[in-house]
Image (cartoon, rainbow, N blue to C red; front, side):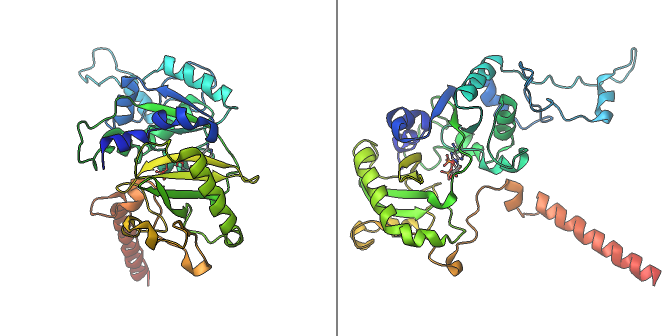
Length: 337
Ligand SMILES: Nc1ncnc2c1ncn2[C@@H]1O[C@H](COP(=O)(O)OP(=O)(O)OP(=O)(O)O)[C@@H](O)[C@H]1O
């Protein structure tokens, strides 16, 4: 894969060209101190100090025991370290506030390539819906998936010249409350031809999709030919679309061919085959065709700790504690008998 191909899939690169067929978005260049704030995992987890009064969160979780740390008694030998000051990004915060208002009050945040999908569980709604700068900072700062954007975006490039993009951006997209997961599709373009379409949410069988499959194929193919083909400059890439109730197609995202992009109902080997081997008319459209055909194990939007079961991991620790507790209960029961 080439660096250029990865760069074209950054939202600040593709959105200006395709905004008339996408979701309304405002893009903000991130100042370096904010990037460093996202990267810094040393010390306590501090949310930025808010310059507005609409802050949804306190900047630090209240812990009465910690408050003692702030009181260094005079003449004490104990040179207690001052707690780090919470960071503040007033200019960015103001721009973000303005964008949130202009997008209707709620937004979906993402960086150049990725959204912080793995931190949705931490928000009060359990989704990525944000209505303040603090909520956005909390989601971004808690996400492991964004480490890809921040540090590893070019890892699969054979012509890699740098480890980070020219600039990092925060894209705020108008929040859509009622997106139907069965109406999202990932489309695969090889040699500038649409060769495959896959249901995006592959862990569920949606009976209604079976009936709509043919008309959806036509809608998506027409959309591709009219709006993307010969306008998106890569030879090979993927794009995600959402089909609305009134049959309009919106492009949600672009991703590079292969590497970190999930092929969903396909394998990359299948997609790499000559397109004549795929489907009757060249476009192989795959959906989950029955309850038994759902594909487990493709969950990606979970915290790293959920997946990491190695010795010393959070999961390992949890299992050890559970085991010890069980043994203790057995001993107690035996002693009582
Ligand atoms: N504006 C929005 N409002 C509500 N939900 C959204 C919005 N945009 C995207 N989503 C939901 O979030 C999901 C992930 O969005 P997106 O593709 O932008 O993230 P991503 O990190 O690039 O994902 P991937 O790495 O899988 O491409 C989408 O499939 C969609 O369900």
